[in-house]
Image (cartoon, rainbow, N blue to C red; front, side, top):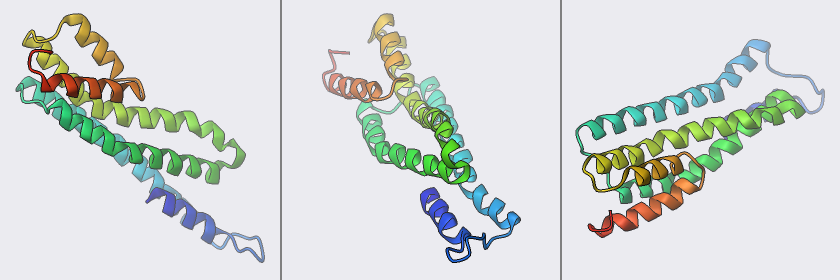
Length: 168
């Protein structure tokens, strides 16, 4: 959605024959605010996910690792789309200086990933409280949940181990 709005904004904002902007400054500001609203919304969703993971851990009713893994795999296209949308937004708004926008986009995507890794971490803390995993394994798996790609590898491992009740 954000990609479509920025591309539409780029396409409509310039008259190709005259090279002049067809929008007033206030219209440009309103249209430029749309992707910013998506950024703010996508920052709020991981926070809500973290809160629900903490509540689930307190009640010891966490999701299974297999469900968490399915959710993470479904989020991969979103990460790619998010990176493409907001990088293109930065390039359109800032021109060549938009490359400076990329670390901010990476931090934003990491925040989203960390927010949804909270369910894995909550599950690990519940398993640790039940003495089903060691303190070192809990710390190592929690650390892996905050690193791109390694969180998926760890989630595959934990989902496989969860099938065998004696392995965790």
